[in-house]
Image (cartoon, rainbow, N blue to C red; front, side, top):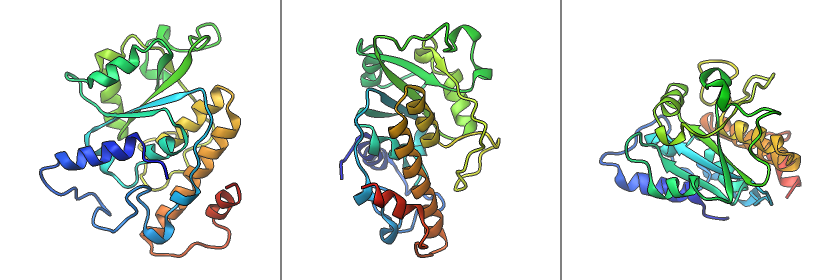
Length: 237
């Protein structure tokens, strides 16, 4: 399988740790690429999509080390996926260069209620035309994401894309504060749908569903049931 930005960031962040990362499930032997138990690994089923979009994951410190993080699913699918550890005062220079790259139109995906109205993208204010969208996802807990949104001056001038999905998140691995808060991969699927890449959005949504199911099966040391989403993904291979 393809080694991408999140794998590299994981290795970098792990090398910088001064003590073992002891999150729940941190001691379990996992596939180093998909973070699932070896017998539930989904790496052979992953495919790279053809897309005109890119994603930038701005991750809160230890988020990249959490096996439950779904951001790596985006990078599994979308070739131009970038990932950086968040800093308020010392943002990564490569990330700043990416935000200023003229081929991309960067935009932050975040709930409208936290943004100034003039930054919100709508039918009368759509900056995507003529450029490839670079979707910026703030990856962490809900409290961390709000902090990143408020305290990242290098993002303050960027437009904000907001979604209000009617269905609550189906991500049961990590409980959100509010029912309508979505996992990172779920938000990315909405972004792909927004630009008309319906097939890519469906593929990411299915990959997310498989990851979620296999992660929960691994927690309970269960085998794949005959109706698992894994087999649907495999049939698409």
